[in-house]
Length: 409
Ligand code: ADP
Ligand code: MG
Image 1 (cartoon, rainbow, N blue to C red):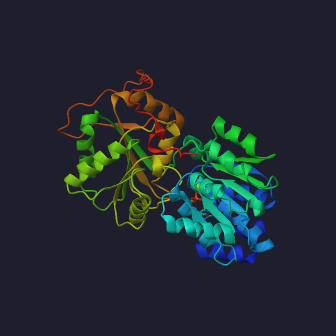
Image 2: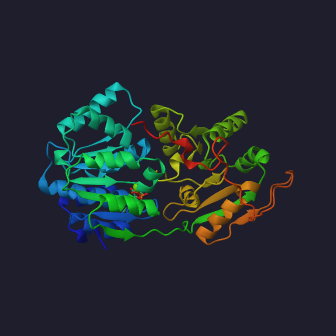
Image 3: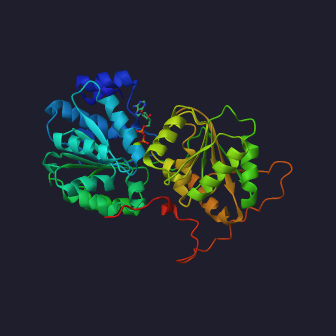
């Protein structure tokens, strides 16, 4: 199928040409006609499959048709600041030849940015892309007129629920006009997404193109390794890889800091990104990595979903993500499109069982590599031992929410 068959206005087609988008991706092909018919929709497809344009294009088209108004018509709620900025950039690109205006609204900025956001909300940017907490702060101040809102979009809805934004989302939805279009996009379809959909969407069209399989271009391998061997192992792997772009994941921010420190001590210019950094620092690190100024980035799962960075050669999982699907998201950062890439995972004795769940999910046995010469023996791959969940008070190692501070209401 071609974009020209979808019935877009000329200004939208022009932008697609300028962006070099030749044909719609599968989710776009299915979602765009439904969104254009003003239907509610739930769209599930893996990260990197073009979900953003799947909702941005038909909405820009609608704005072209009815003309830009002095009220906000579209609210896009996203889980993180990084994603808000990224979507805003895509909107800017795709709306270049239209009258539509947009603004990204996210917490962490200073008073000045709050004022700029307030101005955009009161003078009516067409499209507002926002994180839930910050948007509620504006709503609570009472100056935002929601009466013009026609499209309400939840992007990365699974991530938002993981981060505890359910109530915030409901709160926002309650303030919007009843007659509106609701769109929900997600990389996965757990039961709680269905619940949210039942609660917010009216007779939604469901489009599900989720394939829980990593891209074929990713070469996956794993080491069985004790925790105390991990730093030495990562140094060994990084030897001679000066020209590669490498992303290392850990589910804990303390570990991210430890890795950065250890590598820096070794003279390796690694940077870390996690929720302890302030807004500006996070933006800088992310931009430097995108622009290839930094070649070695150590990150918590803040980066594993959604964020689109091209040209990563190697992903290292310093530990196993708590959610098997996050493994696919993490390694999906490499080998985007037709590229190839390598993903290496460190498995300690406690993680064997969880890794076996990942292997089941991807329906593939990941090759276990022998530790390099000079290393003591690592643990055996024993998947029968399931690490018990520790109760309150104990150190929870598999708590994916630990990097996120749910916003105070
Ligand atoms: P998702 O939200 O599904 O993770 P994105 O919307 O972020 O995916 O898109 C991933 C990348 O693919 C982006 O760089 C985007 O510009 C690009 N892209 C999206 N649609 C197309 C298309 N039809 N043709 C070419 N590139 C596209
Ligand atoms: Mg997306």
